[in-house]
Image 1 (cartoon, rainbow, N blue to C red):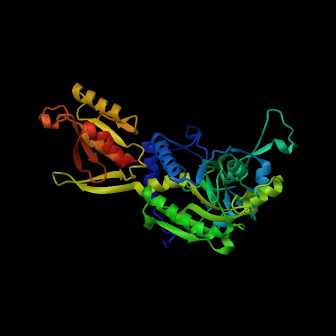
Image 2: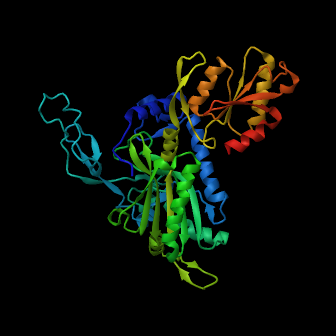
Length: 463
């Protein structure tokens, strides 16, 4: 097990800088000083996140016969969250500094932090925050429904959902009735959740607005523990497939006293971020708790009826729940590399390269005419771009020397650069006419490929 205290703040600072400079992630409302705990994904970040979500959906819904999709509403009826235990019970312990007024989670500070207003005190005087006694702080965002509502009307109160799971549980019976599914089966969802975190931190890792990728997998009680172990291995393989090395992943078997009270087994899948080893995903065996409480509070039957055995029972559920934003951040951290090189004249050189797996890369291919002042090269390059564009995200660049353009694409993780040169036009011989030079990002090796074969060649490598 890796040491969770090992950090690399310098590396993390470089990653955060690159994210803003290249358009992966921006601070929300930065123009007005920023909205703490909220982030906007720029052009490259939006593509990276979309690639992750599409691949997750493909692996968990499209390629499986036992899982169906759902897209639940963000606004959540307070009765749903009252039944689940969130209303009145979804909180963190908070402490305030009486001097500088900063707030902290009481369970995440081992000693009082340095007080911002006491930093200039003479040497030897106490510079630590003066903390209040811990008190519970509700993490949910509350809102009102309707244009004209009575403040005392409980039906007018709603919440921004703190997790995507509850909409799956309350729609479980509708999914069964409308789709003729049999146990075991799952319902999958990708969607936004909201938590009023006391202390957002570590870039996008802990935010107030975030996206989850969850499956609730319904099963018989006797299969719950076995399926939890199977889902753990399935999820570990998924992270390897998207480019996160297995040796950077760690599995924490959460101890009895540390699990949620309704969980019989929980695994945390953790990743070695530059700021320490932190959780990416939880795989939890939630037993029949969720459906049982919703049946009790709603008064509606949520049992599953087995046509073969004629049994009626509340299914148990295994929940693999991944943080989409955390996984995007892990992909960025895993991809970032600084490579020392040697130029042809023997002088030292270096490059920053984002080694994304091609499936995840925001830009799949860059089309680069060798010279922008040669109309024939530009025309042919635009033909190639139009050939590829309906099938993948393509970037066209004709500014600066070809070497500099290669480096720009390395820095955003583009796996393939396609150079349109004089050989493409047939000026170096008819045998090379209508071929292009494809340069691979990691090895920087180049191969010659006919334009007629280019699309198929790329699709084999970027999907």
